[in-house]
Length: 168
Image (tube, rainbow, N blue to C red; front, side, top):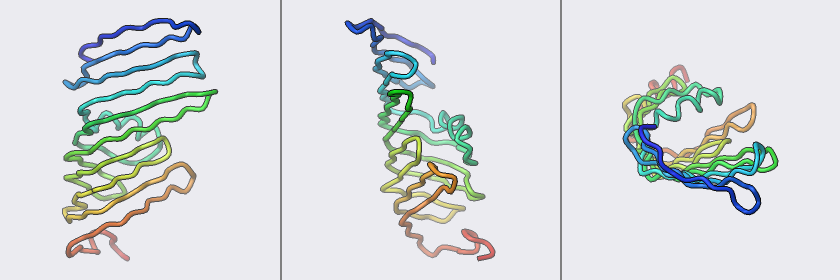
């Protein structure tokens, strides 16, 4: 972070609570949180825009073979919470000018609304190009099981199926 400001305090139940603001890669990020102990805490984060590349370490940690090239997440709202030792997270916002390589394909010019959690992501009002072929629609991916799934409704205009599914 380039700059961090904020205040922390202890409340009547000895919880630590507070608000912070920081500048990360030139963008303001605000956070509000509450910490009881290592098994019980929560934080809410907001930002007008963050580089999608900031997600790369988390994607790699999840075991997914997805490479993020460029793009921004705009109007981001996120929450991380741990209650009784169970960690949950979610984030939502929009993607602008995303560029991702996954499953042997190049996805570029990605524009979408997104909702993500620790178990998957959904993309709606989606437009992008896959291997140079324009597409639009919606997609969702779930990686909560050993057999991850991807579902969607996509529309291609004159798609070259040999490029999308070679050998099929």
